[in-house]
Image 1 (cartoon, helix red, strand yellow):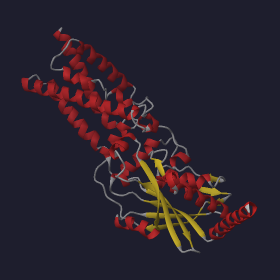
Image 2 (spheres, helix red, strand yellow):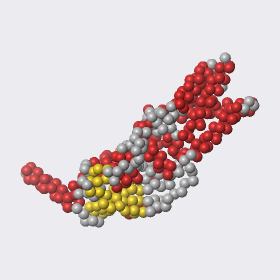
Image 3 (cartoon, helix red, strand yellow):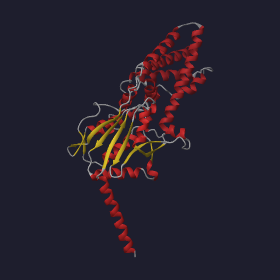
Image 4 (tube, helix red, strand yellow):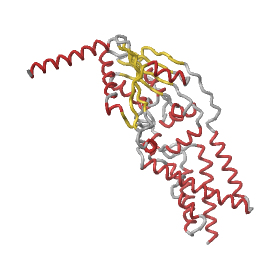
Length: 387
């Protein structure tokens, strides 16, 4: 009886495999690349896999960009980099409707795959759609909706070669983020991201690493060959979205911060009682804000899973202790003079090493850090005269 059952089971498995092999001959696999939208979350675009089976008349799009707001402690998980994303499958028409509504461009690249490779990709997708496998902890650079597609496609096609560089030489991950933010007219977002992200995004990316962004995965696929044949046999533009015009220039934060810092510097040179009172308030605010920001950077470094926030040299000017020192300005203890002298030295060294440290510091911060140096020196001299 056991032998009979085993034989039937083996026959069943073989029949399933036979069906899969038969159906895969009628299957077309392509990569869908969606252009950026107007909202910040959609600024970097999106990537998905489309599978069309002419034998069953199915047309399914698989993607890895889903998340729900009803997760327990949603905002805390988001802040700490522990938010779970998931894979999902949608009918092609339903998937495309969202991009029609948002007026975004959508491109399709049909892949040149043999039956064995198609089956490997389908099996990998099915594995990602089952149970706990569908959930993953999102990482903007290393594990996102685009890298998931990249890994499934390329890991199941070992013979591919990318013949052309898809990014210029010495391009870093931060440069690629800047590319999207500059194009999207997000200079203030760019400044905030540059403050939060540490030196781990300043490595020079390879072709494979550069494909963590949708547009660059599309370029990588177009430049790829599989056994001397183009990896992409056909490229279609499914939707043509309208380019969004942005008036904000990339140097707007530098101009606004620079003008305000210049006004504060001029005000600090005035000897009137009113000017001195205003400057004393500004000094307290500078210490409070830079200290609070420093505490946030420490939190992002040590208390979250955001690996890209580690090793952040912005802590040299966003110094966490400033937050506590701000409350001592009223009492004016003697040790404050030494503190401001030490901070002046740290800030001066940071400015001197600005272009040499292994992290790109946003140029809009330069006038602000210069102002901090000026105020640290002035405060140190002020406490020295009080002795």
